[in-house]
Length: 150
Image (cartoon, rainbow, N blue to C red):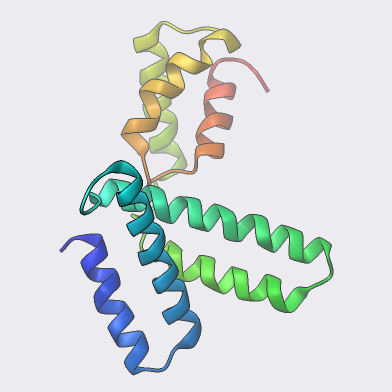
């Protein structure tokens, strides 16, 4: 079942169950997906593209949590955390660190990279393989470590 079809199904269930937060969050996801499809000139997005949209929305929520926490607005920060949790349910299972490190080591060997100057080549090789299954920040950190940086 396509990811957006699952979102539609869950949206209907949330509407029937009167889950206001989930309804608003899933509607936001559908709107963001539609906007992304329009921007790309497509009728519908592929699942991988929807996962990218979800990842962006989660990142926005996490940044908002940080801002609300600094601004002493715990109720708004909690709402953003709950929305992020709802969205994370639609992401594929996150890759274990060991598996991610193995992929990075293989990419380092394949690219023949050494030192920080090889980071771009390694990231270019790794990111398509782990799309949606690993956080970009974590990938970047592990690549830096693999190339001998901090």
